Length: 99
Image 1 (tube, helix red, strand yellow):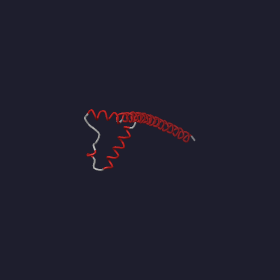
Image 2 (cartoon, rainbow, N blue to C red; image 1 turned 135 degrees about the vertical axis):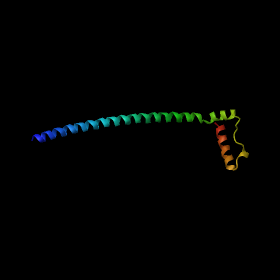
Image 3 (cartoon, rainbow, N blue to C red; image 1 turned 180 degrees about the vertical axis):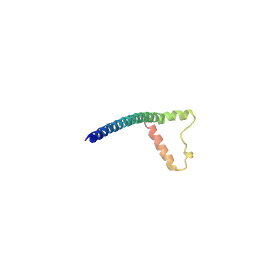
Image 4 (cartoon, helix red, strand yellow; image 1 turned 90 degrees about the vertical axis):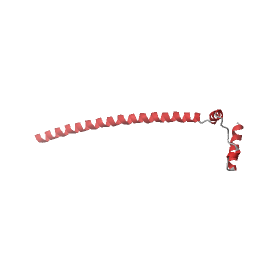
């Protein structure tokens, strides 16, 4: 009987130590997950800002101003090989002029 009590006591102590170690590991892993979630959220915010900046920087009216300052002009008809390209360009230019 005494041997059974001693064995049960050591089994309880071993279980307590095992559960304590498992609890410690779980908390450490939880902290790592939260840190990675914060990094991912910051990355999502940065992506949203970069998309907004790209939208601003690629506006046709903004690009047109800089292109003209560099001496660039819209393509001429003789620069195209296919007539469909010219008609598509004319449609776009007429659409932008009719604003």
